[in-house]
Image (cartoon, rainbow, N blue to C red):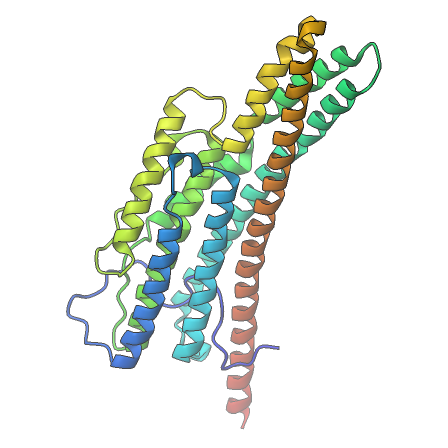
Length: 345
């Protein structure tokens, strides 16, 4: 059970995020500066890892999984920083708690939307399994059955009507409006936290906007965030954002049916198979047909495995955010109870 003096874990739980950091703020002690620099250097290294080695890595499920893992690591780092700073929840102002609870709800909404879309896409794997089963059977109707399953798969994956994903833009817009280096008066520890939380929020909003753009197929959902040049991670973020955004915009303007790389590869395999299934396989083409069937099976397996792994990471981020809310509320109740006992005495 969390103790009353334990700092709450989670996203942006301290400070007023709607105000700018004062240029006249007092200098930090060497200890606090070391904590801040350590956090920012770790974030910089994490952002460097998100810089794709090639354009083909962008919007692969493995890159998206890496991005979500990176978010979880950053949020874990902020938990550690809160612990190191030893800021008791009893010192929090009510408005700071309200801000935290509001933002954490938005993060939970985004996680639910992402999980919903990943689950929906993975449900298409059933149609592909039916295709492969039909083509491997000796039934005279195998081509008819396989074609029907492929038609159903195409219709399923191209249905861009997930209301939860459509709502992500509004959620992200509301988070961006509060995206600034906050100001905290008379609290050196608070200043350190505010600068650290600024980095957490920048990374979180940007990665979530990339995910949203990938599933909505719209550049309107992709953000170009202008960030302060003060943090040690600022240049790494700007470089990564520039490369990733440029490639995503190129993909979206190319007229492709999907920009998710593993899904695109399955679609390419389907495009090869479909005419042969529709017209029947000539004996001369039999070996080519078998190769295409094997290729579809391989690409479908990679897609399904990648979706499962990314869904697991999104669920981890959801649980982390939810746990942060629970710890905060538990600490608040403990603090209120402690205050009440003190008043009785």
